[in-house]
Length: 124
Image (tube, rainbow, N blue to C red):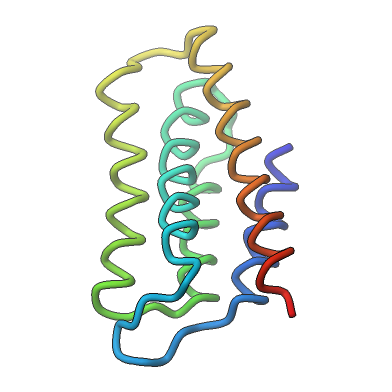
């Protein structure tokens, strides 16, 4: 499932393309910020649940930023979303629990859905 989320994120970022106006908000910025938060959450939770993925989810966030090329406030909001996801779960979970595993599954599903919806809406 995580591979599908990553593929969808890359596709969304490439289809949406960068917004070049000075820090102008794109209509999909809220969704991109939510994806960033999900990636931060997965970066933390997959790490404590022994996935041996290393920096995979952080790297995927970097790939999303690189593809979207946000600047200024847009970039800061995306990074803040990632950090919010990471820090929020870091405060809640110290070890992998059944609830953490359920949360991982739900966040992968949510990220996949957001990616599909963005692709369907902004692909053309």
